[in-house]
Amino acid sequence: MRERSERRFSREFKLAALARMDAGENVSALSRELGVPRKYLYQWRDRFRFGGAVALRSRGRPTKAEVLAIETGNAAALPTASAAMPVAAPLDDLALAQRRIAALERKIGEQQLELDFFQKALRQVREARQQSGVPGGTASTRSSKR
Image (cartoon, rainbow, N blue to C red; front, top):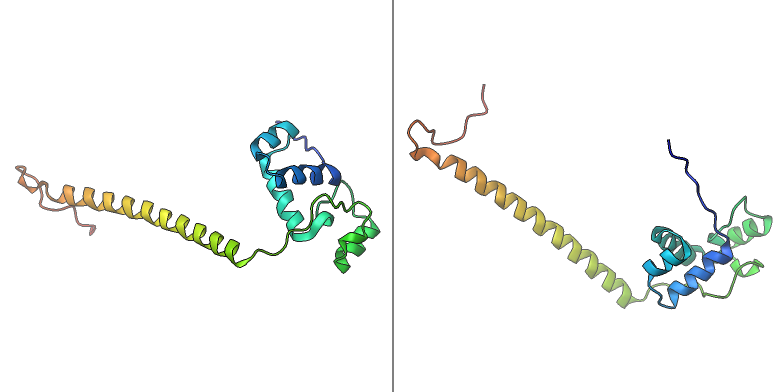
């Protein structure tokens, strides 16, 4: 059985990585350089966008100051809350529309795959039924009745 060794990253490390992501660095290259799975970088970004630097907890229990800041929503009160990256503003209408369009395009792609699959299956069923010209062949598939 393999041992699971989980690395812990400090809030400062996470903020520095997020600042580099925000500057436009390639996420895959950044992931390899830092030795952090890409999945973690995206999770940190989402947490930061939702709750600011407070949401990027480091190891251990939250301090009283962190708990108070979380409860009051005052991340600036934390001494470790870095100004390296501002908290992302709510998405504007254009960004929301673009996300909606992308989601609908994905859905159309999924539906096209399903449609292709069922058309192929229907074609195979029709071909199996049309083999009645063979001596001894049946004109259709077997009945499901027993």
